[in-house]
Length: 433
Image 1 (cartoon, rainbow, N blue to C red):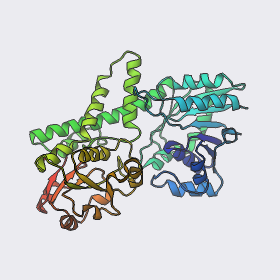
Image 2: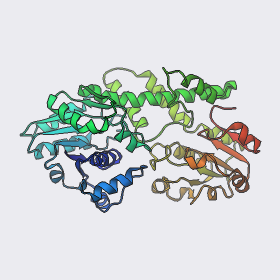
Image 3: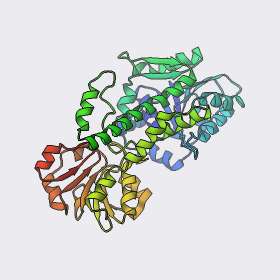
Image 4: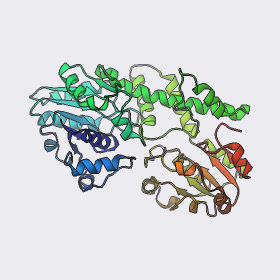
């Protein structure tokens, strides 16, 4: 098939590359000429494990192309994916201006039948709005489909190439046939392609992310109880995760969730509920718990240093909101940094991928290290905010040699309490004595 993908952000670039990998010819369109030039020259613009190799192969083989010309980009395409940003507005609702602007342009450019696919995470009813925007100008038949993505940053290529399910919201049999043919190579092992109406598909995406965010916040509340009652949250997690009705995933306590999806989607579903006069009590609590959890380590740090952090210097391992990504949107590390700086402390940070993004946002407000151990030099304590694999089995002797105090504040519960205490460290984690 010939496919157009409008938007070359995270979802657009992963989707376009993976569709090309199965033999489709994909043209990605973006208004950012600088980004398009970089991509055309083979410079990938996001960090995602496994993506670059696939990207370069399909670029070289001519199945993946880039342009700023929307008319050229959709020419001959059977399917047009809208993978555009939907940032939260001031009131928390998803801003559809980019999606609807492109839809308006598409109406003027369509010359033959196409399936227009909402790939962006959008509120319920967006397909109707996109259809209306295109209809104002269109002189040919078209269909609008909702096809939400369920990509986890860090394993997005695997998620796309081997999805556990594909959700397609479509009311047209013609569109269902086109979309079914497109996804057939991705579900050869029998995982389902689930067809439903557009509104149900739109809500499915929000419901899935909000439920996972709820699991995380619930376990963080359990961790709070464990600290007060003397229980071990790791034991509790294993005990309840063995129940098939609950499952093992998304039960790890820590310093909250971040990223481009969970915070925005929870906020947007709350707003959508308010618009139909429903008060979504659980999600409001999920959001509140997560905001508090991001700085869960700060009171422990303050207590250790007798509530005076002025002049203290901290090493911070991890800036990305999760490992295997350079995404710092709503990253707990940024909230920790903000709190420490306000208290008069200084910070040297290390992250394998996210430091350039933090430099753009924070500049020289903090220092940056070329490796984790250099960040420790002269630090009063080590704080861990992201569970990168390279942090899991560090050289504790080197850590001891660089830190002023043998103390670690671990927001991701990376180490065994008994083993690290045997090494003589004071160790503060989440939900464990």
